[in-house]
Image 1 (cartoon, helix red, strand yellow):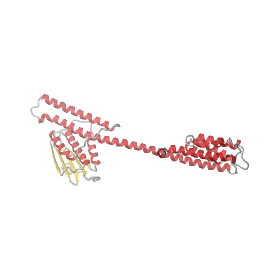
Image 2: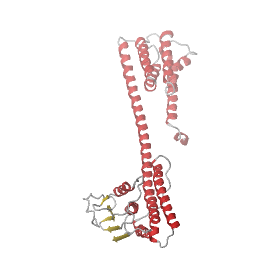
Image 3: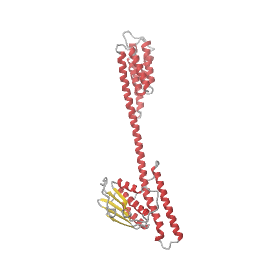
Image 4: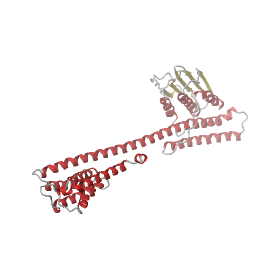
Length: 396
């Protein structure tokens, strides 16, 4: 029994209470009906039912319940004879049920019907109740009751609208989180794909100069590989825009760390890029998020140097101290073919800012390009932006 009661919804509880109150009102109206009206015993239960049972419609259809209650009250006042010495046009139970139904109409019914119910009830009770002030007191009392009901109605509606707005905001926050995650994945894919595809282009372009006795056919094949790789790189950049639209996210892949940086530099040099680097301090203790940002910044900087300044010397300097500083610079080289642009610099800057650091990138006065970043090593620390260093200085 207790389990059943716990499983009842709020609506079921309201219905159960309504039935209980209606039965209680009926049990009072039946034996007391003869006090106010002259009725025979067989008729009493039916007239008492008109007084109490319209209350059963208070939730499902209060307007119909009010109409039945008001109509039967008018019938009691006009057609049923009163007891000598009784001035009440209908029983007290009938009046209470009529007031409750009028309140329910004010809460649930359309506004035009609320006005009709108030006016009709005021006219019915004001005209049938004894007393000189009945025509004024009862309408004012019913008006206050209806205004209170309307206040509750507006409060409930405002809470529903607020709940709907909160649900919409929650959906919007979830959608924004998905879009931000897609943007992050798009930057990761750009960093990985652009770096490796750029190295393919560089290897294909420099192979005839690094490998001895290259035949004309092999040279043409290398040129074809380089052209195909450049075309694929441009197409991949365009396809990355799909990740910025709505849809499901791809699975997360393992992310590189700061300890993987030497392997990246070795691979880049093996690909034919004239690269030199220095690392001061240990990369093993760099936090995961900062290490990922460092790796991606260096990776994108090397890819940009290979793509836009082929053949130029590239230098990388990493210093791990109170903070992590990184500098990637290259001299002037052979400009690569014009592409459709990408998200490289914006992605590097976003990664630096995401971990509380800063990044400055720009061209050297005498030719070449520098990328400089400062990243915090302590969690929750945001670095204060510093003045940009001289372009030719190898350290921050």
